[in-house]
Length: 101
Image (cartoon, rainbow, N blue to C red; front, side):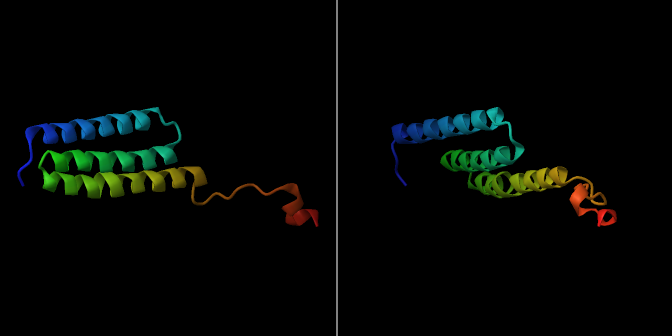
């Protein structure tokens, strides 16, 4: 493919802007579940940057790990933490107790 150097520079600059914006949003997001989604978007932006920089192998690795696996692990961890320990159940309301019947 025969492209002009100006077009490649523009694509690299645009990909860098996307990565910068996505990373800033990820750093400023407080909710861990939303952070996982933003990290997935950041992974896609980084994959795009690596693809523009002619590193397709790194782009595919980033797409698999940074976009799919890492956010999934974060979401599963957040879900586990919000549920609490496995053996503990939430306390029942007084109207649900068996000894009140």
